[in-house]
Amino acid sequence: MKSKSILSISLLNLAILAAGAIPVFSQSRQTFQSLPNGVYFYGESQMPDQKDTFYFVLRKTGNNIVGMSYAGMERSECFRGTVRQNTINNLTVAEVEPGSGIGWQFSQAETPFDLNELYRIDSKQIPEGALAQLQECVRLFSNTRR
Image 1 (cartoon, rainbow, N blue to C red):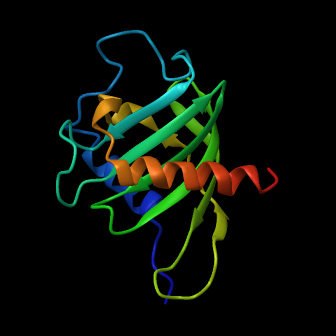
Image 2 (image 1 turned 180 degrees about the vertical axis):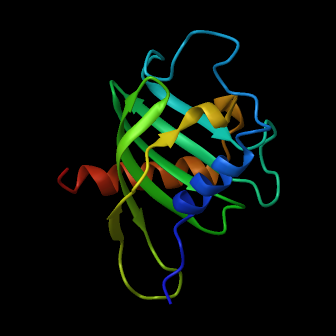
């Protein structure tokens, strides 16, 4: 039985948490799209390394995003898309089933990814393992066609 991807599960969790979440950009008019190129860190919690909490490390280059998501660094996945305002659209998700022996499996996400439901965390707090995984995601998507 194929398990659901972290991104799919986290999108569902974000929808459930939306009622109680404080939007990332509610205090300013700045959108993710307007941020300079760089690496950004977002999470369901303002504190990094919380158990059972989803985190997202995003590399922004223009309107193109390559990112990785994880919960507890036990399992992660890569994704690519384009940003408009605070939403990542046209998401391609890549994941590996642990222990399956099968390489990367690609799929299209059915829903856009809304950053308004996450907290932005200082990028200096990104775990080393997450940065290494992000670099693997960048390599993965640089070797695949859009």
